Length: 73
Image 1 (cartoon, rainbow, N blue to C red):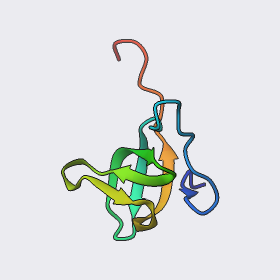
Image 2: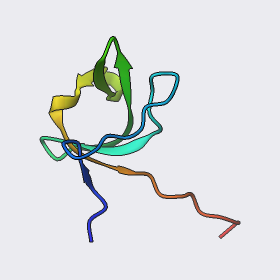
Image 3: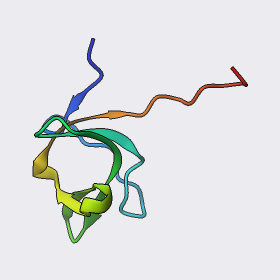
Image 4: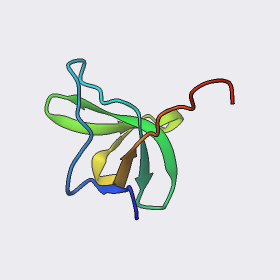
């Protein structure tokens, strides 16, 4: 079962500071990165590291990050 969510179906919730929680995003070329969505003046973009903010249209799917491990392994 895939945990990927299409950006056409639903987006991560964007909080009161105009930024979503970190999620795993995949772009149209299959590149994956932990990132977040940012909104300004009604436009949503993806914070993509050194590449800066990229248009949401460049991305196909996302998924929530898993919970971190508990304890000392």
